[in-house]
Picture 1 (tube, rainbow, N blue to C red):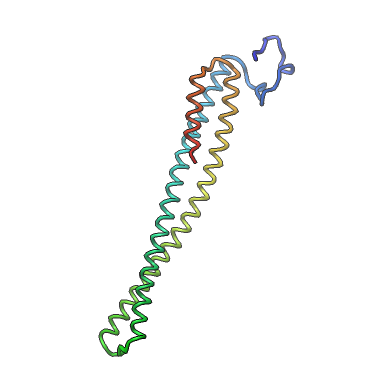
Picture 2 (cartoon, helix red, strand yellow; picture 1 turned 90 degrees about the vertical axis):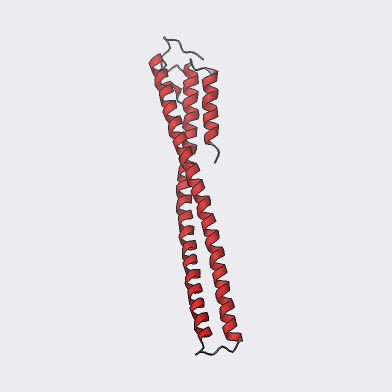
Length: 176
């Protein structure tokens, strides 16, 4: 739909807030510039989403590894203690002291891996919170891009090729 110059702004139909924008060439250039800025910001946000999603995956993997290693060292500890209690190892023998030292070391290592698990779990929660914020921002930006794209297309002089390029850029951002 094109607007006649003699039509007042009160008589113009309002297409999702299009009435408020200047329909001049300068206004169109400004809308295109704003669209490009929104696209750049959204692409930056998409990169942040990707980086944060990778961090969540790495944190989860590290938490699982810490859990497996802690379980391994706890099982060694349990095996050593069961050996001491089921055999007649004398308290004054050197084997008793070696087993006690190894059990203590295993307990310390297992507790250290449990601390790593707790740390990684807290890290994943913190990064997931940041990820949700970035995803929300990304969705809002894509919505704004869609609205701005409608304004730009409605203003005319915007090629279908450029619109297709913008659509492709937006789809690349929406991987998460």
